[in-house]
Length: 290
Image (cartoon, rainbow, N blue to C red):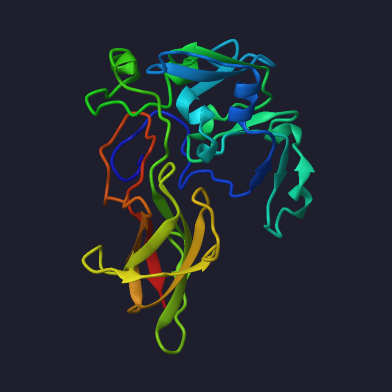
């Protein structure tokens, strides 16, 4: 969003940070039921998570919360993660291992489909309460501010008017080729494009990924290469497409994904000061095709 629209306030994540793996631990709902949590009116009830291990840049502790109904819903698969595993050969040391310190040892919250800001690491306390977490990072960050909030000073008038981000939006990324790279065509003038796509919130799995070589005027269906059989609704999918390209500089590829819930990427969402929840088309631009 920073380079496509205009400057935003915050860390430039590029295509973002994502991890696709298996987490093992008790379900949050089971823990809450074991604690005999009971609230008659759940309309504004949250389950809040807190870590007091160290002070943060803008608060003395770190915290976040999700709606209590989501936490109690076994289908939401929110867990108190104790172990992590991935099928990636790049990180075999993580297969079925106790959490490392960097991943939140001894226990962290994992809330699939929800912004990672709510998945508190080094968990010290779980509180069932009315209203969201009072932590700075739930109240004054990770929110989609309206476009009229163009400065940090103006944002102070809007933080309390918009909800904290919960579900993440559908998204896709072109991983190969990266923007600015040189693409060497095969003898038949084709090239294989690869990437990944993520569903929106709990509306997965991703059921369709498309690619455009003409600026979004026409689209062709990609092949989902990983996770086709039995993939969970929370997982990414890997995809590829063989495209025919003309030789020359400054070429551009676009991708878009659709999930089971019918959510599809738009060409470019509305700008917001923090640059969060951006889910415009995946893009690889300024390609030199030879």
